[in-house]
Amino acid sequence: MNMLKTENLTFECETGNYHTFCPISCVSWLYQKIEDSFFLVIGTKTCGYFLQNAMGVMIFAEPRYAMAELEEGDISAQLNDYQELKRLCLEIKTDRNPSVIFWIGTCTTEIIKMDLEGIAPKLEKELNVPIVVARANGLDYAFTQGEDTVLSAMAQRCPKISIQNHKQAPLIIFGSLPESTANQLSQELTKQGISISGWLPERKYTQLPEISEGSYVVGVNPFLSRTATTLMRRKKAKLIRAPFPIGPDGTRAWIEKICSVYQIEPKGLEEREEKIWNNLSPYLEIVKNKSVFFMGDNLLEISLARFLARCGMTIYEIGIPYMDKRFQSAELELLEKTCLEKQHFLPKIVEKPDNYNQIERIYDLGPDLVITGMAHANPLEARNINTKWSVEFTFAQIHGFGNAGEILKLVTRPLQRKSMRSSSFV
Ligand code: SF4
Image 1 (cartoon, rainbow, N blue to C red):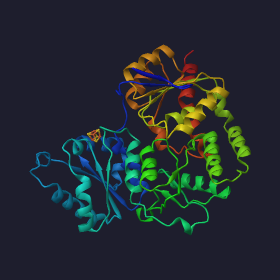
Image 2 (image 1 turned 180 degrees about the horizontal axis):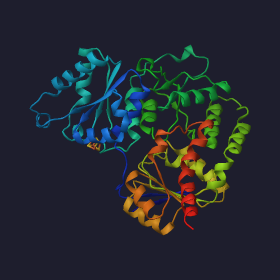
Image 3 (image 1 turned 90 degrees about the vertical axis):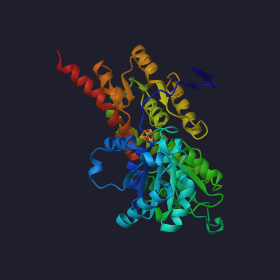
Image 4 (image 1 turned 90 degrees about the horizontal axis):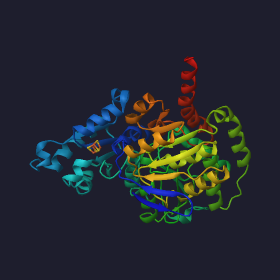
């Protein structure tokens, strides 16, 4: 195991032998967010089986995604990739008439080196529909990073404008959030006198935000490091490094950081945060002095751990699939500060964890709650260890002041279930 001790937090890197969702799962929330899109996953039956099962009942609602299932002839290059994809995309265009077709590359297209980026521009011209290629494969990425590959590809399509048209440098927020949550965050910034020039993604592909050199960009999720890099390198935008708006503490820090960039004195944030904490007090009673162990599979772990530490929980370990220390720098600082203020020891951050080793550590430490995937949840429950299924944090609304209760609802449910269970046996 490689071990690196920074001044304060400890970072470790294990074998990468852990459970997570394949990043192609991002089509399930992105096709709902971008209403005029169609997602074509170019892969095998393995990918199809995964999506079909992971998406549950959603597959009966005629989703705007499909599999282009590769056959023997595709693999051995006896069929012509260009003609095959043209046939499928024509069908999609006729049936659904989308404003954009996303091609999602998979492990197989990587291994057989299918030239999706080369074919897309030609077909795009021929069919007159934008085709955006994202390599959201399981070889390189984990779960939510799928969204990162899609947004990073979309960022390159954002039109350029001249910054002189604006009084203040434009602000673009990146990260896909449900409409109501995105509106809440926009309103918080508007209250501080900051206007938002656009979101990446918006509800429609045709409304891609304009990004000019010198625009400010800020992320709402910790897994968007590639998108951030693309915006900085390709669009010459300036990244605001802030903690993420998860939990009242994170939301306040996020707004404050944006205000500081625009040299605006934030108004009423302290009272706002305090009020939210007061409303959370019934939950806080339950989580106070409890310990939590994150096995790590969705990259939200640092932000959630920081919020739970602020709630009074002890964090034993934060497993995480991939740790971009630069993109998450403000979040890491806040985690450290929170633990010091709460007089908790600083948790260990384990990148690319090894689930087998983690289970051993869980047995040793005996945490009150383990946040983990479905593969380990029931086996741990059977061994009397409380678990929370980590995927729920990805699909629940957890951003902004108003949604802090949602996170604690998820965390406290298994803790309460345990106390109910023990009280029913006398
Ligand atoms: S890991 Fe690869 S083969 Fe498996 S579902 Fe994902 S893209 Fe398909």
